Image 1 (cartoon, rainbow, N blue to C red):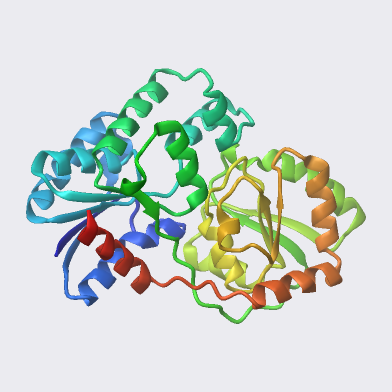
Image 2 (cartoon, one colour; image 1 turned 180 degrees about the horizontal axis):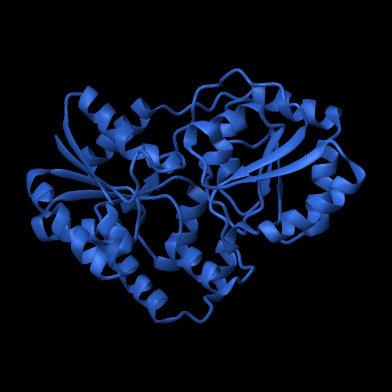
Length: 335
């Protein structure tokens, strides 16, 4: 196979999703296939919506001509131009659904405390840009060869709203690393790393943390943004626990990576992560502030904490890049 990977992220970008392009390329080549990866550059990042899609379409077109199989690693930024180019040239394309661009755009524009499920149930009033995103997403769904979700939870939500057929959608789990030796935390710090945007619900967790800190001096909330990947990884190794209070966090790589160090987690129940980790952490509604306060405080008790660690230690959910690459190749053989 001649495989083209399109991604909005470079390997130097911070965060787990940035590793998907180079890691898949490496595994495809190791399996005897030819592979190219094309990512967003400086120009795409400064162009407005529409123009950046057109630019990226023209940028990838020669490689789409070269390839006979294509995988796009997001929906809107690279997925739409990649599907358009694939449709034009008759290529088979898999689109990885790793988030929900429409919901995210709405929540971060309006600061509305609405979950992914609530968003699709109520479908609030959208602005012009979001209406255009909806049109493009429907085009993508109707023209992609296959949609690879990372959780069945999101697949069911999209199926209910967009009415896509079962035969064009399935689940390819996120990369789940092998277990690593945990570091011993110096204090009871709860760690989160990512972009500080409204959908992450950080205002709520800061209020909760301030109240807990007044009663537990050894507690600390660590919110990290903009750090290099290796620095974040070191923090993950030595933290007490990780958290995500987002209104929705579909399958957070950050939590998965921290769990590899056998660190318990506390996170939003609006997620598909419980398909991987049914135990070893606490799942809470993102709007129930008192429940978060009580649960974090409970996890400060070593009896609760040690029980969660034991649950994590009993789980073996590793999902390697070799397995992921093989699953994509198997899909191409069927579509």
